Length: 367
Image (cartoon, rainbow, N blue to C red; front, side):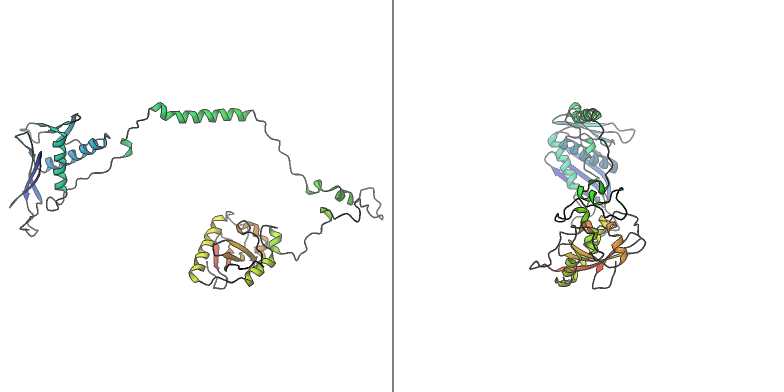
């Protein structure tokens, strides 16, 4: 059974003639047109239509859609050349040419106004939106690429920033050429900058073996830097590792033992993941220089800040500077501060193979 489809606009009429699909049940109201036999385009002011088969209609739809896209965007881009071609004559006239499909035919040319052209575009849009007509037809339109956009800025203006940048770089290099190279001085030993009292306190070579050395400083003078006693072996290992940068062992112990702990499992899980990501990102010394795990007990605030830590094994004391804990620790903590926020206690292990393991201190250790 022959099926007709007609899409009518004031200045253009598109008529499609075809057959249905025998495998599909017939719709008595609007049967499916699946095989195109003939396509006709009638334009106002022209007696003879342009017409052809499936190849003609596919070329017509593609050419008209791409030409309208170029006309509306004012961006010229390559249009596929087939048996249907469109050429702009002036701002309001466009020549539609249909090349001969067989040897016995002649080329057809129709000059369309802009209104007629866009009535044809609307007719094709109505066809594409019709699911009962040629459902396998694909128009294949795509957005225009940026490479087709011609810059409206002259080449001289576009090249000016580059030229200015190169000239500035050359001028800076010329000025730096005349700057003298700074003199590099080796750091002096610590004893070289000591106080006069410290220097005079040491015995001179001329002092007799049995006589006591002479001390220039008065007994009532305050002790100098050289007379300050060195830290005793009982000094907190945290304070000795980075004086002033982290809390003392007593402060950390008070923090861990006296501060209420966070008990919400989801909050602890989030803090564990955040701490592991933070330490893994900051641990830049790879591969590690130690051969046994470094284990620490770390106090973490609800915001994820490291408030303090304690050493768990001997290796963690010797290699603490190879971890990011000293740099990431928060300000020193006052254990007597009122209304202290709850904390989470974590077990942090830096393994010799470069992996950071974080787990709740009171739970089963896991990575």
